[in-house]
Amino acid sequence: MSSHSSDPAAVVQRQLEAYNARDMDALLAAYSETAEFYEHPSTLLASGAAALRERFATRFREPNLHAALLNRTVMGNFVVDHEEVQRTFPEGTGRIRLLMTYEVQSGRIVRAWILAGERTLD
Image 1 (cartoon, rainbow, N blue to C red):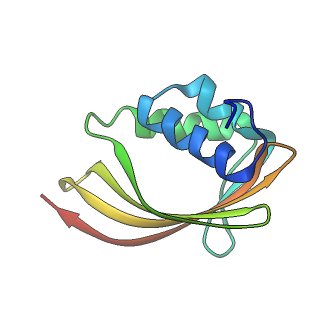
Image 2: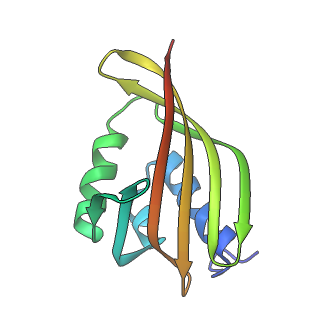
């Protein structure tokens, strides 16, 4: 697939790669300027590019941050990723499993939902 593909799975893969590379510009390029980021089902965590930048900048300060894709399901313009993310929590380093749901329109993520599992400390 082209790196500029608007295929929903390709868009989500680009944002995952940018997240792991801590490439803020590439990451935000995958999102609409008015994208909304929710804690599932309806708690708004960030709305718009500036709020997303602030949220991701906080994550990017974690030295061990890395998201591993465990499974991906695509249905139309929705992509659901099951991920295991290495993080630095206030209690120490560890991992958390997430279900990330992305809605993609016109080649950009317009809405994303996070459903977090339990944290496991190292």
